Length: 220
Length: 220
DNA sequence: GCATTTTTTTAGCTTTGTCTAAAAATAATA
DNA sequence: TATTATTTTTAGACAAAGCTAAAAAAATGC
Image (tube, rainbow over all chains, first blue to last red):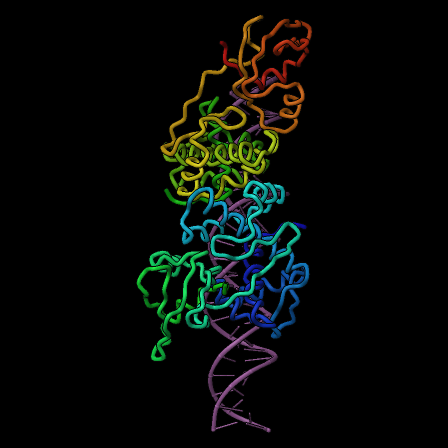
């Protein structure tokens, strides 16, 4: 597996994430995701096409090739292992790990990553509950139920948060909603779709639909 | 402390090392050290001068400013902490850590480095015995005696190896000469200045002057 | 189905960091 | 000291990765 530039890796990773819930990624979408201009995306797609990492025809959108997917999973593996390291070993808060891992993920030395994996005890999920691909790029995603769709009075355990921003993670921490937290939905308000949540024997509290859409639970 | 590019950091670090044993660093020397061309060095020196990191007048050589020294010590701190981490935690051999640390040293997040330092237990030397600057950039260098100058039958403990190449480090490992190893010089041969070394109760063996010049000991 | 809007691409420019070739300054030597 | 050799700098070019403005293609709306 050859080496790619930081910029190439960021493009590959962003396409990987975007193509999960759509069959083709557009120039504008990717430009928005990477906070860059559409013209720059076109240039990069041409380059990644010659490197056989994306399938691309002009005006037709794009997707990663098999090889592109492999590269993406490797980057994601590095990112999530570093996140786990920062959180478990260096005691970073879960809302601080993402930005640091964004830099560390580009240190592409496979021996380093495999030894880090071993040192960490082969963790299966990162601090946000996202699965960590193994050295072969295999990833097992647990089936996720979004909190906003959890039926009333059904106990669930938070196992994933889809938003990595410290904005969201700080609110969740403040409400004591962490990975592994067991909770139930006690009430749903039609007016604004907000939810009343109960954790353990604490008093119930209210969260917005928007926040509940970022949290995933496993029903137990 | 602002952020510098990888290339800028590499230039700063190289100047720092070169200026230890000379009062002024020349264009050609730095070009050789960084495996680049003299013309490129001139360009970079102009840039680092405007950033007040080097004192430089054309045709007159250069040195780091106070600020340049601070930046250099910070880079060296990062490098050596990562080396320690790779060696102690990830179980890399001491001849493998340098190259990986060359990349990791450029991740310039102070919180990361300070937390790494704490996690590692504030180590004072890296796997080659080189001192690790603290968060304030303070560095304490132990007085070093070069092995080739150690008097006969005087016990010493290896506390530093000045060559980071795996070539040298592999030979030393093979001869069981590591940081902390206690040894004595039993004989010196005038012809080629080679030395006969004795470690513990093993049989004595011979090493070349060139190798002995890379090893430093503390006399006990 | 044609005009308008939106999206995407192209063309050409900028910056960073490198290079080569030639010119200028300094150092070495006869 | 004059000449030659060496070192350093300048000038100009190139690749990577981004940008703006304009052109081209596709999508939308009446």
